[in-house]
Length: 251
Image (cartoon, rainbow, N blue to C red; front, top):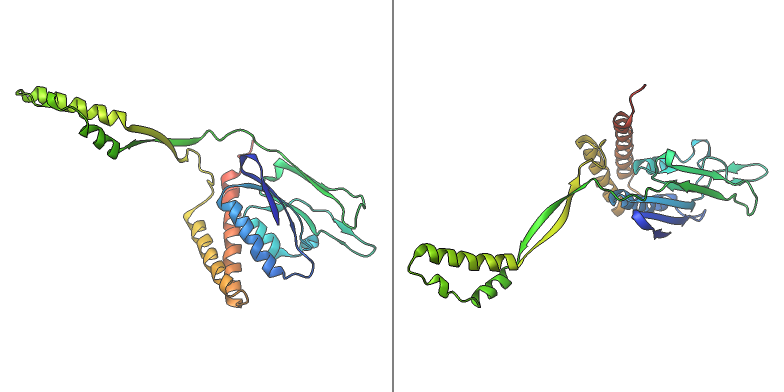
Protein backbone atom coordinates (compact mmCIF):
# COMPACT_ATOMS: atom_id res chain seq x y z
CA UNK A 1 0.00 0.00 0.00
CA UNK A 2 1.14 3.54 -0.77
CA UNK A 3 -0.83 6.72 0.02
CA UNK A 4 -0.21 10.40 -0.69
CA UNK A 5 -2.16 13.11 1.14
CA UNK A 6 -3.19 16.09 -0.99
CA UNK A 7 -4.79 19.38 -0.01
CA UNK A 8 -8.09 19.51 1.87
CA UNK A 9 -7.45 16.13 3.54
CA UNK A 10 -7.75 14.16 0.29
CA UNK A 11 -5.69 10.97 0.12
CA UNK A 12 -4.88 9.00 -3.03
CA UNK A 13 -3.41 5.53 -2.73
CA UNK A 14 -2.53 2.37 -4.61
CA UNK A 15 -2.95 -1.15 -3.27
CA UNK A 16 -1.97 -4.56 -4.63
CA UNK A 17 -2.98 -7.96 -3.31
CA UNK A 18 -1.07 -10.94 -4.74
CA UNK A 19 -3.39 -13.72 -5.98
CA UNK A 20 -2.03 -16.28 -3.52
CA UNK A 21 -2.26 -14.16 -0.36
CA UNK A 22 -4.80 -14.77 2.41
CA UNK A 23 -8.07 -12.96 1.71
CA UNK A 24 -9.06 -12.61 5.38
CA UNK A 25 -5.69 -11.08 6.30
CA UNK A 26 -6.07 -8.62 3.45
CA UNK A 27 -9.65 -7.78 4.51
CA UNK A 28 -8.48 -7.06 8.05
CA UNK A 29 -5.77 -4.68 6.81
CA UNK A 30 -8.19 -2.96 4.45
CA UNK A 31 -10.65 -2.45 7.29
CA UNK A 32 -7.92 -0.67 9.27
CA UNK A 33 -7.31 1.64 6.29
CA UNK A 34 -10.99 2.38 5.69
CA UNK A 35 -11.61 2.95 9.37
CA UNK A 36 -8.75 5.46 9.51
CA UNK A 37 -10.32 7.56 6.74
CA UNK A 38 -13.77 7.29 8.33
CA UNK A 39 -12.53 8.30 11.80
CA UNK A 40 -10.59 11.28 10.45
CA UNK A 41 -13.33 12.46 8.05
CA UNK A 42 -10.91 12.23 5.11
CA UNK A 43 -11.83 11.85 1.47
CA UNK A 44 -9.89 9.06 -0.20
CA UNK A 45 -9.41 7.48 -3.62
CA UNK A 46 -7.86 4.01 -3.69
CA UNK A 47 -6.69 2.51 -6.98
CA UNK A 48 -6.11 -1.19 -6.64
CA UNK A 49 -5.45 -4.55 -8.19
CA UNK A 50 -7.12 -6.60 -5.48
CA UNK A 51 -7.46 -9.86 -7.42
CA UNK A 52 -10.97 -10.05 -6.00
CA UNK A 53 -13.59 -10.55 -8.68
CA UNK A 54 -16.72 -8.45 -8.09
CA UNK A 55 -18.49 -9.53 -11.28
CA UNK A 56 -21.94 -11.08 -10.80
CA UNK A 57 -22.03 -9.91 -7.15
CA UNK A 58 -19.12 -12.14 -6.17
CA UNK A 59 -17.20 -11.39 -2.95
CA UNK A 60 -20.18 -9.87 -1.17
CA UNK A 61 -18.27 -9.76 2.13
CA UNK A 62 -15.71 -7.45 0.52
CA UNK A 63 -18.43 -5.21 -0.88
CA UNK A 64 -20.15 -5.12 2.52
CA UNK A 65 -16.87 -4.04 4.11
CA UNK A 66 -16.59 -1.11 1.70
CA UNK A 67 -20.17 -0.01 2.28
CA UNK A 68 -19.74 -0.19 6.05
CA UNK A 69 -17.25 2.67 5.90
CA UNK A 70 -18.94 4.69 3.16
CA UNK A 71 -16.76 3.45 0.28
CA UNK A 72 -17.75 1.95 -3.04
CA UNK A 73 -16.04 0.47 -6.07
CA UNK A 74 -16.70 2.63 -9.13
CA UNK A 75 -15.44 0.06 -11.66
CA UNK A 76 -18.34 -2.08 -12.87
CA UNK A 77 -17.04 -3.38 -16.22
CA UNK A 78 -14.53 -6.21 -16.75
CA UNK A 79 -10.88 -5.22 -16.39
CA UNK A 80 -9.34 -8.56 -17.35
CA UNK A 81 -10.70 -10.47 -20.32
CA UNK A 82 -9.48 -13.75 -21.78
CA UNK A 83 -10.86 -16.12 -24.38
CA UNK A 84 -13.06 -17.87 -21.81
CA UNK A 85 -13.43 -15.53 -18.83
CA UNK A 86 -13.91 -11.91 -17.84
CA UNK A 87 -13.47 -10.49 -14.36
CA UNK A 88 -13.49 -7.22 -12.43
CA UNK A 89 -10.34 -7.44 -10.32
CA UNK A 90 -9.00 -3.88 -10.77
CA UNK A 91 -10.96 -1.49 -8.58
CA UNK A 92 -11.09 2.23 -7.85
CA UNK A 93 -12.61 2.90 -4.44
CA UNK A 94 -13.69 6.22 -2.99
CA UNK A 95 -15.96 7.68 -0.32
CA UNK A 96 -17.25 10.36 -2.69
CA UNK A 97 -20.93 10.51 -3.56
CA UNK A 98 -21.61 8.78 -6.85
CA UNK A 99 -22.73 11.99 -8.57
CA UNK A 100 -19.30 13.55 -7.82
CA UNK A 101 -17.24 11.01 -9.78
CA UNK A 102 -16.96 9.56 -13.26
CA UNK A 103 -15.13 6.27 -13.63
CA UNK A 104 -14.65 3.65 -16.30
CA UNK A 105 -12.49 1.14 -18.11
CA UNK A 106 -10.40 1.84 -21.21
CA UNK A 107 -10.76 -1.26 -23.36
CA UNK A 108 -7.28 -1.22 -24.84
CA UNK A 109 -5.14 -4.30 -24.28
CA UNK A 110 -1.97 -2.44 -23.32
CA UNK A 111 -1.32 -5.20 -20.79
CA UNK A 112 -3.31 -8.22 -19.68
CA UNK A 113 -5.41 -5.78 -17.60
CA UNK A 114 -7.48 -2.95 -19.06
CA UNK A 115 -6.57 0.54 -17.72
CA UNK A 116 -9.08 2.19 -15.39
CA UNK A 117 -9.74 5.86 -14.62
CA UNK A 118 -11.68 8.08 -12.25
CA UNK A 119 -12.52 11.80 -12.38
CA UNK A 120 -13.61 13.38 -9.10
CA UNK A 121 -15.12 16.78 -8.38
CA UNK A 122 -13.12 18.32 -5.55
CA UNK A 123 -14.59 21.11 -3.44
CA UNK A 124 -11.78 23.61 -2.76
CA UNK A 125 -13.90 25.81 -0.54
CA UNK A 126 -12.92 25.96 3.10
CA UNK A 127 -15.52 24.88 5.60
CA UNK A 128 -17.04 28.05 7.04
CA UNK A 129 -19.75 26.57 9.20
CA UNK A 130 -17.43 25.60 12.02
CA UNK A 131 -18.10 27.57 15.18
CA UNK A 132 -15.23 28.71 17.38
CA UNK A 133 -14.87 29.56 21.04
CA UNK A 134 -12.74 32.44 22.33
CA UNK A 135 -10.39 31.20 25.06
CA UNK A 136 -8.86 33.54 27.62
CA UNK A 137 -5.54 32.57 29.20
CA UNK A 138 -3.75 34.26 32.11
CA UNK A 139 -0.05 33.75 32.83
CA UNK A 140 -0.06 33.60 36.62
CA UNK A 141 3.72 33.34 37.02
CA UNK A 142 4.48 36.45 34.98
CA UNK A 143 1.66 38.34 36.69
CA UNK A 144 3.00 37.38 40.11
CA UNK A 145 6.52 38.45 39.19
CA UNK A 146 5.25 41.75 37.80
CA UNK A 147 3.33 42.49 41.01
CA UNK A 148 6.42 41.78 43.11
CA UNK A 149 8.28 44.47 41.17
CA UNK A 150 5.48 47.07 41.50
CA UNK A 151 5.63 50.11 43.75
CA UNK A 152 2.72 49.74 46.19
CA UNK A 153 3.24 53.08 47.91
CA UNK A 154 -0.02 54.34 46.38
CA UNK A 155 -1.85 51.66 48.34
CA UNK A 156 -0.59 53.01 51.67
CA UNK A 157 -3.23 55.73 51.86
CA UNK A 158 -5.23 56.69 54.90
CA UNK A 159 -8.39 56.80 52.80
CA UNK A 160 -9.45 53.21 52.19
CA UNK A 161 -11.28 54.07 48.95
CA UNK A 162 -8.18 55.69 47.43
CA UNK A 163 -6.03 52.78 48.58
CA UNK A 164 -8.48 50.31 47.05
CA UNK A 165 -8.54 52.18 43.72
CA UNK A 166 -4.74 52.23 43.59
CA UNK A 167 -4.48 48.53 44.35
CA UNK A 168 -7.15 47.67 41.76
CA UNK A 169 -5.34 49.63 39.04
CA UNK A 170 -2.04 47.86 39.76
CA UNK A 171 -3.66 44.43 39.73
CA UNK A 172 -5.70 45.15 36.59
CA UNK A 173 -2.68 46.47 34.66
CA UNK A 174 -0.71 43.30 35.45
CA UNK A 175 -3.67 41.11 34.53
CA UNK A 176 -4.24 42.82 31.16
CA UNK A 177 -0.53 42.78 30.35
CA UNK A 178 -0.21 39.01 30.67
CA UNK A 179 -3.60 37.95 29.35
CA UNK A 180 -3.86 36.32 25.90
CA UNK A 181 -6.71 35.15 23.70
CA UNK A 182 -6.97 32.20 21.34
CA UNK A 183 -9.70 30.57 19.34
CA UNK A 184 -10.66 26.92 19.50
CA UNK A 185 -13.02 25.04 17.21
CA UNK A 186 -15.96 23.78 19.23
CA UNK A 187 -18.40 22.13 16.87
CA UNK A 188 -20.02 22.41 13.48
CA UNK A 189 -23.26 24.35 13.25
CA UNK A 190 -24.44 21.68 10.82
CA UNK A 191 -23.85 18.05 11.90
CA UNK A 192 -21.29 16.21 9.75
CA UNK A 193 -23.35 13.01 9.99
CA UNK A 194 -26.99 14.06 10.46
CA UNK A 195 -28.10 10.46 9.94
CA UNK A 196 -26.17 9.16 12.95
CA UNK A 197 -28.25 8.00 15.91
CA UNK A 198 -27.48 6.49 19.30
CA UNK A 199 -28.75 3.09 18.15
CA UNK A 200 -26.38 3.11 15.15
CA UNK A 201 -23.46 4.18 17.35
CA UNK A 202 -24.29 1.33 19.73
CA UNK A 203 -24.18 -1.21 16.89
CA UNK A 204 -20.89 0.25 15.59
CA UNK A 205 -19.37 -0.07 19.06
CA UNK A 206 -20.51 -3.69 19.19
CA UNK A 207 -18.94 -4.28 15.79
CA UNK A 208 -15.65 -2.76 16.98
CA UNK A 209 -15.76 -4.92 20.11
CA UNK A 210 -15.90 -8.13 18.07
CA UNK A 211 -13.36 -6.80 15.60
CA UNK A 212 -10.88 -6.27 18.43
CA UNK A 213 -11.62 -9.80 19.63
CA UNK A 214 -10.83 -11.11 16.14
CA UNK A 215 -7.42 -9.43 16.14
CA UNK A 216 -6.31 -11.73 18.93
CA UNK A 217 -7.95 -14.83 17.47
CA UNK A 218 -8.60 -14.42 13.75
CA UNK A 219 -9.75 -18.02 13.20
CA UNK A 220 -12.44 -18.04 15.89
CA UNK A 221 -15.73 -18.71 14.03
CA UNK A 222 -17.83 -17.24 16.84
CA UNK A 223 -15.96 -13.92 16.75
CA UNK A 224 -16.19 -13.84 12.95
CA UNK A 225 -19.93 -14.48 12.98
CA UNK A 226 -20.61 -11.85 15.66
CA UNK A 227 -18.47 -9.26 13.85
CA UNK A 228 -20.14 -10.00 10.51
CA UNK A 229 -23.60 -9.76 12.05
CA UNK A 230 -22.89 -6.42 13.75
CA UNK A 231 -21.23 -5.02 10.61
CA UNK A 232 -24.15 -5.98 8.38
CA UNK A 233 -26.63 -4.56 10.87
CA UNK A 234 -24.76 -1.25 11.12
CA UNK A 235 -24.68 -1.01 7.33
CA UNK A 236 -28.41 -1.70 7.03
CA UNK A 237 -29.28 0.85 9.72
CA UNK A 238 -27.04 3.55 8.21
CA UNK A 239 -28.38 3.01 4.69
CA UNK A 240 -31.96 3.23 5.93
CA UNK A 241 -31.27 6.31 8.03
CA UNK A 242 -29.27 8.08 5.29
CA UNK A 243 -32.07 7.51 2.81
CA UNK A 244 -34.57 9.00 5.22
CA UNK A 245 -32.43 12.06 6.06
CA UNK A 246 -31.03 12.81 2.60
CA UNK A 247 -34.11 12.03 0.56
CA UNK A 248 -35.37 15.14 -1.16
CA UNK A 249 -39.08 15.86 -1.25
CA UNK A 250 -40.75 15.32 -4.57
CA UNK A 251 -41.94 18.15 -6.80
